Length: 64
Image 1 (cartoon, one colour):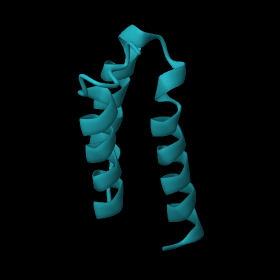
Image 2 (tube, helix red, strand yellow):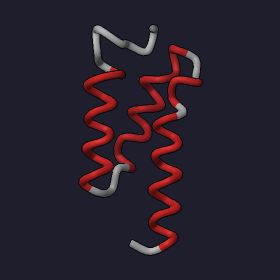
Image 3 (cartoon, one colour):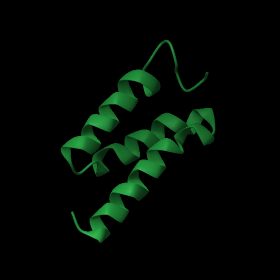
Image 4 (cartoon, helix red, strand yellow):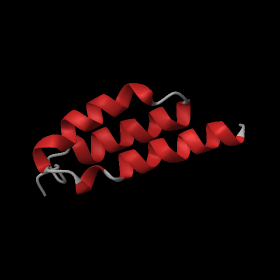
């Protein structure tokens, strides 16, 4: 992985991790906008994890 790719990955993960700082109503829409940008298997695993455990979870939904 080149430095440019690493920076892109780092920036993408930061965007995912910053979602809780958005307004509750904007979190799901922004997550769905970011989802297609997951360009590697590990990033897709991260997105799936966030989707299952945070975005679409009844235990920890964005409203909590």
